[in-house]
Length: 222
Image 1 (cartoon, rainbow, N blue to C red):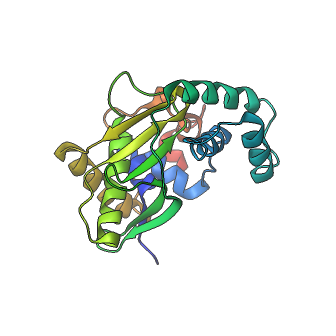
Image 2 (cartoon, helix red, strand yellow):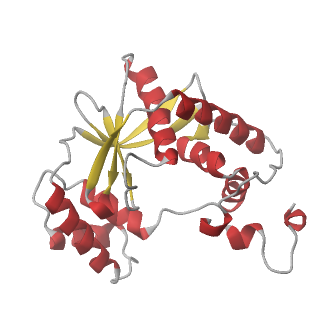
């Protein structure tokens, strides 16, 4: 059995091991908003033509609801206003670290530093980047360093809904959290049932109903 763990799974396990456990059993598809943000990002640095991007999205995801056109237009407006996105040389690059047993897909590769960008379909924090995104950046850094043989110091996080791109340099605390979460994810993948964390983000978790449905105890799921 392949025990390699996706970088996105490591991030999920860092937030809540139970959420990773449920995702591993039931799976999760990328959201339509994320698909919109990816396509917008791939047009930054070029002419941001809403009609062209929308036609591409409908070709990629024929079932995409028409209501997402308004979301697309909002993203485009903010990205046009910003104009801070870097040129890129490659997109959707599959990466892997055999040393650490992790893999993923880097959204955009750049020349120089920051070496890459990841695309997020959420609003940016007031300052910096979210803790989960710092873990994502570190995971991709490990993979790219092993694949290229050169030191990677930083990555970018593109918060497309706000048109904001921020450089991320993971700190030691982020790296420690990444390896702890990786160890937790490996245990779960091997069959261990995780415990609920001390302070789980239940109120904002999309899996809250699956984790503790009405009329059932958590132990009923296992």
